[in-house]
Length: 277
Ligand SMILES: [Zn+2]
Ligand SMILES: [Zn+2]
Ligand SMILES: [Zn+2]
Image 1: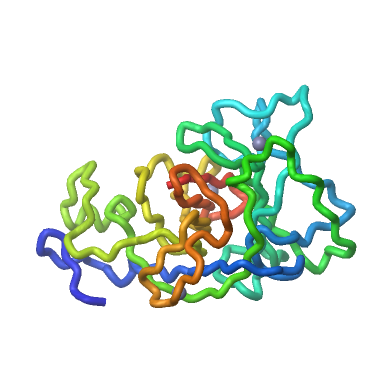
Image 2 (image 1 turned 180 degrees about the vertical axis):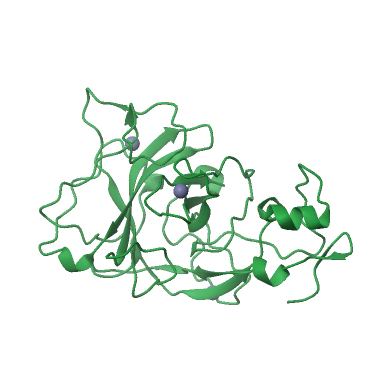
């Protein structure tokens, strides 16, 4: 990595700040339930109820920790969720699969929900052992009042890896202290590599439109970690691959943003957070 400095001072531990993200490069396709994908059929067992939106009022304890300002009233039918993404351990061992699980399923409630941090779909993360699934369930119909901009077109992945450096706001406290970075400073060092918009696993948050805010774990206090980014637009930058389709999944998060999922590095079962940036 070329010499990067902060105000002319070499950045201590620069190499330790690098995270290798797996860029997903979604491309429209026809995935099966036993494949990794966006928006395709989930490997969901027929003997397990199809999930409903967790952002009810009061919220389900499994809802993401996003200070929801409201939710679906419990005295009315709660919307069924739609399959948004599925990642198998065999394809993406970089994901923090809990022991005994080998597939992560992400479901959306495809309508706008309001938190102080963002407006967008509500999520569930399901970490599952695919070996326990026998008969596969058909999903229920998409809710009538679903927002079409939150329903993905099925995509498969053509992943590559890309090294990323954090934005200044994500520098660890010890690095900030060593460099004497003032409280509240936001501007990246000069010549800092840009973090652009693309779907990925791991890596750092682009913080393109919003600011980093309240990412501590509600359960244990650890700083949550950028785990999955689902982008509206796949920008052709950084990794050198060609991007055939700029918006392959056809979904659009607030202001064409990126939906970022943050999980706890101590225990992925702790409440996760979502930030649309
Ligand atoms: Zn909902
Ligand atoms: Zn935690
Ligand atoms: Zn690439």
